[in-house]
Length: 114
Length: 114
Image (cartoon, rainbow over all chains, first blue to last red; front, side, top):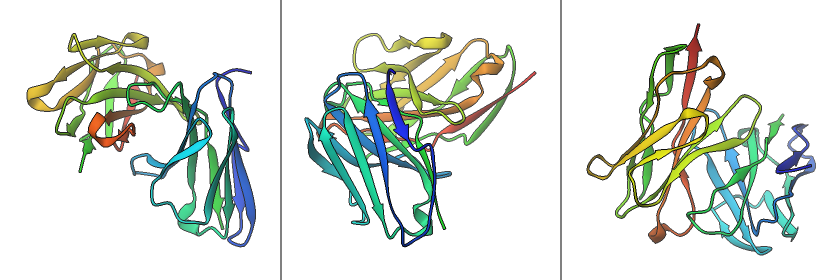
């Protein structure tokens, strides 16, 4: 399998549940990103990892907890979410964390919080 | 703060007609400029990017974009649209003085009528 994959593709959860989103990249990249895409709003950068270290946390609520165990895998752990957290969550990777590098996106996880 | 504006939320063009999608940005220096496309149920795919040099850049799928510093614009064009071009298009901008993060526009949804 090539590129950036995300699982699950769809997730429905209650506000008291705990779930995790998974992202895997097969491109040998050193930087990985989580974005939130809500209807009618620009993509919002949530977190950036470079060489497995978190280098950006864009004022994201603590109910979102990222984890990067190695350069190929990225997780987003979710707990006690709110209905307004319903969105498409996109993972991306790039060769390095530099502004000129192309980011390669996965297909996203469509999250619905009831 | 930096911002990216895509003035048109929706655009409808006839198949075979020409297309121009607008993007304006607010940055203090020469930015890094990207256009991405997102088909339904998919992640974002890079169409083209500009960092320096020739201000007219060619991308995939027959798209091109022109950087105009005096107008702070990076408009995307295609001379003849195909039905398969129906998708959402995002302009993204980065700049060295703002780290390595990209700021995305809100997107333009392109509809193609036959």
